[in-house]
Length: 224
Image (cartoon, rainbow, N blue to C red; front, top):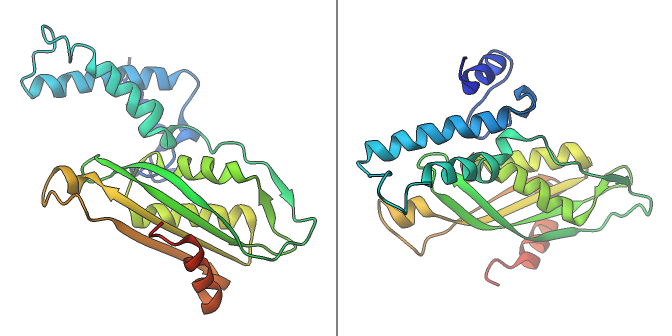
């Protein structure tokens, strides 16, 4: 039988992009994630063997291929394989038009280059209008996790999140600021444990209105 990864790839190819940070859940059929996990397990086992690790007699790594496969498919890269979580939207009945800030939201992701952890925090600022769709506070965390739980580059991740929230809510403005540690710098290369990366995306009135942008940045106060 054709490997499940090849079946999924055949469905996706030519219909949409399937880069590391893309969601391909629409092309995965029921039961195939279990098959994919099993296939990944075999590939990880081959990797360990190529690293000259005796996975048969080493009790610490005997089950590592299974653990790593489950971790990648069901947790670390889960945002690639499952649909966007259900997000309840409700009308802006009170015609709210004041700044709302959510955060810090914990970020757990992985660098696309080395598959090392990216760990950090993120803030979202929203300036709604009377026509905006509002979402529950917990949904900001759920949507953020869905976007971040796939191999990412921080600059692209915040753009993906901002685009998704703007499409959902149709606000007058939206701002996203993310600060994170990149373990590809901690573990390898320069081995710098102190450096963090901070970047932002500003849309609508946050881009046009300097005082509003400064208010948002002063309220999140990255140093806290």
